[in-house]
Image (cartoon, rainbow, N blue to C red; front, top):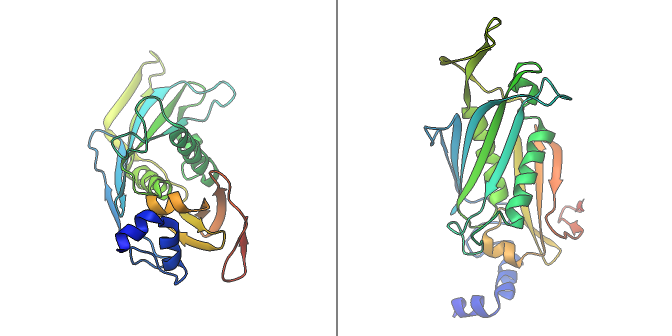
Amino acid sequence: MAVDYKTAQPKEYYRKFLEKEVRPDGRELAEFRPTVLNIGSVSTAEGSSLIKFGNTTVMCGIKAELANPKTEEPQKGFIVPNVELSPLCSPHFRPGPPGEQAQVMSHFMAEVIKNSKCVQLEDLCIVPGKLVWVLHVDMICLNYDGNVTDACVLALLAAFKNTVLPTVEVNDETQAIETKLDKLQPLRVHSHPASTTFAIFDDNILFVDPTVDEESLATGVLTVVTVDDKLCMVHKPGKVHQVRLHTGHRIY
């Protein structure tokens, strides 16, 4: 009977639970799903991680290559994040070029790196004006069950902390590039951004770590990124209305 009610009137079904400050899966409004983190899961990458939030699973791999810096920024390297949401992780996504959600997520991850300064581009410089590192950060969603945003941020940070780069030198006489794989250096991580995604239901109920069903029924979704307990950025994909929390505070 409950299954039929959930299928026929999913929003009303959820509303009955949320009014009692609990969710159909048994979690409280501020309770996250169980989290599993595996570091160094891809042996061919310079750094990698695998993160699970409930059934949501994201793998992050970092590959490094050498390049010339920009003329206007001779002492800065590059970080290129990419989020992949394929049909293999959910029937919601189509084959072909990256969809809108994947593009928005890739841009969001670039902003997290930039605003949190967790990895500074100056640290990727080998020879100013001549040689820098490019870090390709690929985040692949293996199973999509909501809140891929927080999963990507945690997977990114874990992969950064797992990354080691070989020592690279440029011969002054021949200008040849010498890569010393026996001398590895860990990537310096300056800060630890933390992401928390909230779903908003009926414009007055707020809960964290939404599943894909909860995202589909929510009025909006809001992601808050903090660094050392200080606000770093707020991400609002789509329209999010003003929300009044039970404490009387407001989020816009």
